[in-house]
Structure formats: C-alpha cells, structure tokens
Image (cartoon, rainbow, N blue to C red; front, side, top):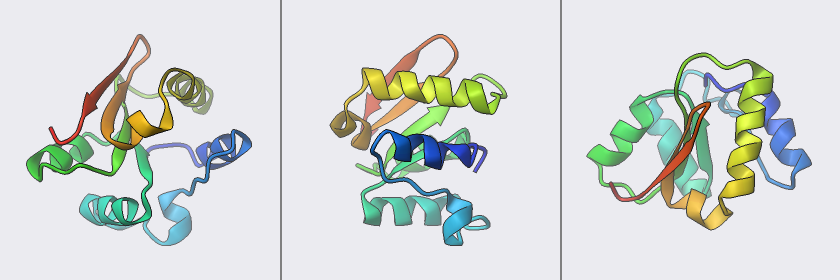
Length: 114
C-alpha cells in the first residue's frame, strides 16, 4: 500500500497490466490476503512493507514475485524513477520468481523460495 497509485498508470504506459490494492477492494486486506490474490492472478506485488518478504520466506513460497522499496520515504517521482530502473534491468520472468529489493543505490534479487 505505501506505493503511489500513480504506479498503475506508469506501468500501463509501459505495456504492463497493473492495479492498486485500494482499487480492487484490498485496501484493508491483510498482507497474506494480498499475497494470495497476487499469486492466484500471477501478479507481482510492489510494496515498501517489510512484512511481505518475511511472509514469503516463512512459507517457502515460490510466488508471487515481489518488488520491495527500502531505504526510507520516496517521493512519487523517485519511486517511479527507481521502478523504471528495475524494469530496464530485470526481465519479467526473473521478477515473477524473485524478491527484488530496490533502494536509491542498487537493485538486488533473490530467487524464491527463500
């Protein structure tokens, strides 16, 4: 949820299907529920919430893919710029089966299950 809703339009402009949790009735859903829905839909979760990788690791999950923003607060412009960098450096297949950690200085990927 701490991801700007502008991400949906940003991804759509680049040919990706995207939705924000708040737009599909998941604004108050648990992290586990959001992961279940994303897994069922074959989606990638984009978040700044550190609970998501912990949940994936605890359950030895193989998905959904996760893009995790770390390192403090980001303006909308900063977040979208970093997301652009992720999309340029990582192919979709690798994003769907890994946790991709993004901060201002680097991008790290860890394959699932963890």
